Amino acid sequence: MGSLAGRAAGIKKIIYTVHGFVFNEPMPGWQKWSYKFAEKFSGRFKDKLICVSEFDRSTGIKNRIVPTEKLITIHNGIAQPNFLSLEQARNELLATYQLPATSYHLIIGTIANFYPTKGLGYLIEAAKLVCEKNDKIIFGVIGDGPNKSKLTAEIKNQQLEKNFLLLGSKQNAWRYLKAFDFYICSSVKEGFPYSILEAMAAGLPLVSTNVGGILEMIENKKSGLLVKPAEPKELAEVILELSQNKNLAAALGRQAAMAVKEKFNLEKMIAETKKVYQV
Image (cartoon, rainbow, N blue to C red; front, side, top):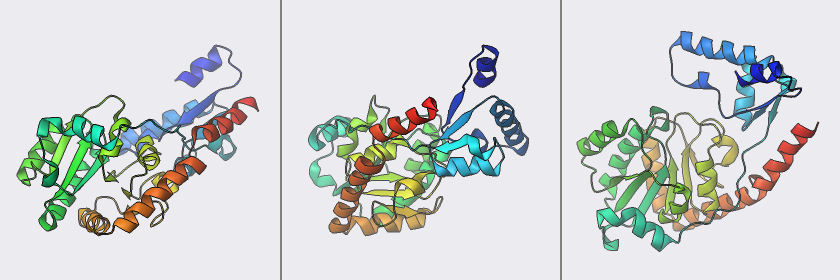
């Protein structure tokens, strides 16, 4: 209860940034109620809640977390990252697999913690459908987490050991994004993920589920392709479509990179945040 402690310490202005509300996570009803109650109670001591997406702001309004005038949206922004080159990124990521370049046509990747909300089980199902049509496509996931053993078992069960690679956790994982031909997000819940902003900055064509703030980041069929969550068949179809259309992939990547520079840059985020703190 940082806001309550702040008031007790005599701090006159308390501003809180919301990176998604916990009660949107899958959990029992009583637990959701408890989190909502805690948010509403602590909200009484906050002057402003900065939401990183309109999705979060509308969630706050719908659940009456605080009065509407206390809620403001400021999208996340990033500086232009310093990526590794394609060759260096692939060499480092795939070194332990010893894959010759002739063994694959495309590498489709993502950065994700191994939690149920990331939808990686659905991505494995989609990968199975994709590889039945084109076994020269490789999927790679940078990350780690509590579901690793379950995901490893599912990869083995689907006989995808050569096509679905768990690449491990990497410090500054965004540096490796150029290793991928496409970036994919299979999440069933998201806020306004930095990983997608970083993939956009890398100029990667994106395929993502249309959840949370992602709808505010990606314009469907212009800066990426959006699919429904938990629909591996639809996800597979879109991946295959994009894999066969180099012109579309290149156009999506260009538009994604432009969107980050124009709408989701760090300078814009800082300027908007300063205005809130200076009022």
